[in-house]
Image (cartoon, rainbow, N blue to C red):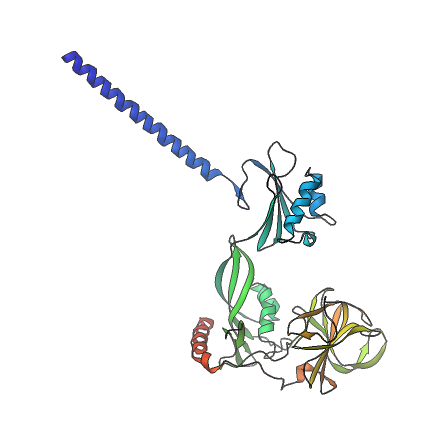
Length: 405
């Protein structure tokens, strides 16, 4: 009996010991699996542990096909990938300086994936083996509300630079307050507050979505801009609900500097004599898009000896505008075409009598060329409608408190 008892005891003990060790092994294996999963590397949503990763920039003259041909991808696969790309991305728009990545299976010569960084917001994935596919992936954007302020000691741009604020906000501010403030006449100690929405991808700032509200203190007055959507997209209004927008844009370019103002008896740098300069010159890089400053109908699209390529637009029976020295016209621009405010009609150049790339903007009122910046009675945009007034006032009060913080 005693012997049988000890035999049973040692048998049970050995089972318990084996199970314990077995459990430890299982638990250890589970931990190892977890570690492996955590260490896997993903790029563009692809597990790249078994791939060689090569990232380069597009060089001048390089194309989708010649990059891949040099890496051993067959003409047939390149052709099939190009066909599948047509409804996703135009391969002719691959540009010098943009990043691309090749993923090649270790031990293989030809890449399995080609990824092109189209812009900061998206990338295009080309799978080049087995079932070829092309897919555009939009990166996940997070939005962050920012509130900044500053005092001007030299210029608005320098103030933003000194405070390390996004420089694109300067141009957005100029657009918002275009008809309220002459930014060429801002004064020392003028100040600003801006509430805006910042776009981030992977923790990096990639852009500005919009300005929600702004305050600009100039010439001892506070100017407010409140963004509000009445059903047609955001527009900007003052604290009383009046539109900050005129029927006409302040400028036919988004980014510019005024190189010559409207004035009588200007010395012409090419003709070497004094003559009236009945327009405003906006200097900008060649190819900068030129926009119509208001809705209208195109009356002229042609070449002039002095004016170069130009477009003239009639906005109503009182106002017309003209845009000179274009490098080229926008596709589809022709006489009789209806045009909308902000629509691109051509591109900055130096055709005709021009010393450098710029657009000479001319403004007619009742058949006479006038300085648009001295027209104090241009038609206003629509104010806040009565049905939106209470909602606007609530938003306005909230934003003004934020701008004062």
